[in-house]
Image 1: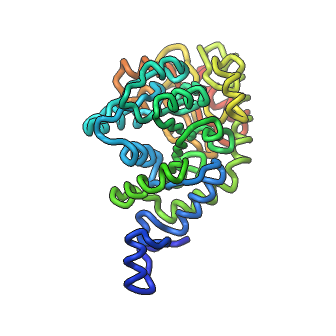
Image 2: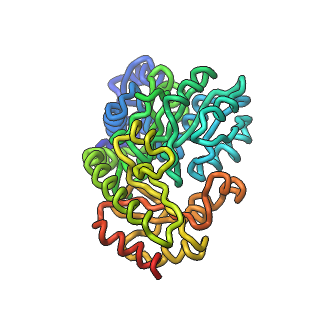
Image 3: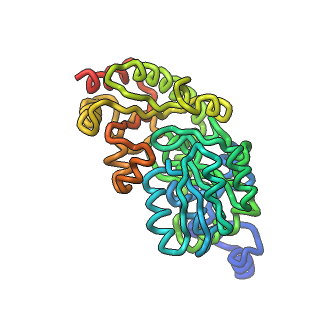
Amino acid sequence: MYLTSSYVFDSAAQAAARFAGEQAGFVYSRYTNPTVAAFETRLAALEGAECCVATASGMAAILAVTMGLLKSGDHIVASRSLFGATIQLFNNLLARFGVTTTWVPLTDPSAWAAAVRPNTRLLFLETPSNPLTEVADIAALSEVARAAGALLAVDNCFCTPALQRPLKLGADIVIHSATKYLDGQGRVLGGAVLGRREQLHEPLTVFLRNAGCALSPFNAWVILKGLETLRVRMQAQSLATLALAGWLESHPRVRRVHYPGLVSHSQHALAMRQQSSGGAILSFEVDGGREAAWRVVDACRVISITANLGDVKSTITHPASTTHGRVAPAVREAAGVSEGLLRLAVGLESVEDLRADLGRGLDG
């Protein structure tokens, strides 16, 4: 673990060559560090990418992509089913700098194609989506992007390379919030952007060098340890989530369960082609709106009430009042985030204990 801010050079000439980019080597930990480089190398190998650029958080990774690759006057086509902070970034911050966004249904490739403009430079999506676990056809959208001369960026946070590898399906860029499953225990913040070296390395490194949203060496080391158990965690958590999804689907107080591993999911067949399992996140709608949903949340004793996900501890949140609470109600409704919707990220506890915990609020 290289907990250092800067590096000592052998000579003034070497320092000048490093700063000018004429010689490979570490310069300053804001954008070059051996521990961070080890994390980048390993995650790139898992995703099958030529290049990985680590960032301070998942949102910093998305910001790096947009600020590093786009300019004023450019246009984004994005899924309506995105994390609330991503929606805020695109609508409120990027728009101030002349980058506009058109929002389309995640699962309709024809809508994506129709939204493309001559100045479209980026197609952006999550699959499965947050919180409804909708699944996009990555291969179909990669064709739309290529026809438009744009890049396809896929947020792979929910699946990780243990369950899905978007680059193999035609994506140009993969984005991670390493805070979630890559760490796996809710300990640190981190993010990453992956893709082709010639496309990403220089513009994103320049952005990090000047903007400063760098991953710390300590956080990189923690996430590296998380990567060592990623596959076994994702497999175990996915199996538990499938069992809980089936139980919830049969519960009389549950209106609907959203989980790609269920046959009832509208994109189940597509999900099983793209993913090795349904993943460890589901959402479900309860009868009675916000009051009933909050009753389920407040009754939990084993499941943690927090908006984070990807931990070995199960977590539950009410998206309409937390992750999507700052999103305009009309936008929320269009994205399917109802007042009765709850998102559950399943950890490694006993499935029986999790059923009992949820049942306390549902049955009461």
